Amino acid sequence: MPATTTAHRRPDTAPGGGPASVPAAERGETRLADRVVARIAAQSAREALDDLPADAVPPYATVNLHQDAGTVRVNVNLELTYPSDLGAQCRAVRRRVTGRVAELAGLKVLEVVVHVERLHSVRGELR
Image (cartoon, rainbow, N blue to C red):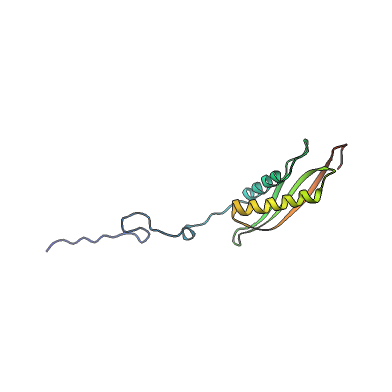
């Protein structure tokens, strides 16, 4: 009687021995650190502003990230030149931060709060 061989393969491999075709969503997950999302938000705020005052602290951000829900709330702190259209600049920051965080991090941005910490006068110092 000829010997029979039975090929045993792991359930997570394809018949040829390579990895099984498992959809990406079922293979694992990607978790972003809060500081990564905050950096994306801060860089986006810089991009949204036409010009920063020469002695201004660059915009920075903090986030409240809910990984399980895929949502984030963002606080952006910045300094602006005065006189200027402050409302328009803040709207531009909110739009840019919302779009870039969604695009790059895949998160739904629930809120972007812009804190103007200091105004830099073209004529003199304001605080």
